[in-house]
Length: 153
Image 1: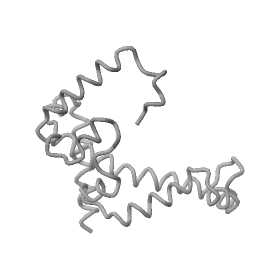
Image 2: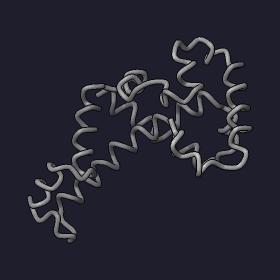
Image 3: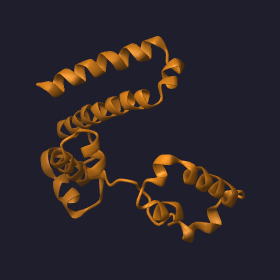
Image 4: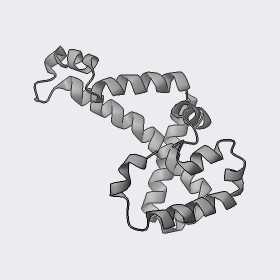
């Protein structure tokens, strides 16, 4: 996958790569994967595509795809991005309500996913919780309860 970038490799790249391959080949879950050869050779970068990850997380895939397309139009330099710049004072470099609204909306949308990922991470690796401050744990638990109540309604 990154064979064209050999000049940027660290000195012990091959040693580290071989160690990681050995560890993966001993991992019981990894051994159950049908694509493990492509993964170990670097031919495939991801275990699951974005839609599969969203589905496994219990989120709505079609809503996610819509959000991805909407947000991508705001950050990539595609023709639609330039077309949309002229509306409502956008594209001038000056602060405007539309862009501030997009920023607030994006922060809200992403914070739900970060919170959910944090909870799942703590479930998978409970020892990490011991390293968090009491305040951090309280914030995560409080926000998660709010998030779960919002999801139910």
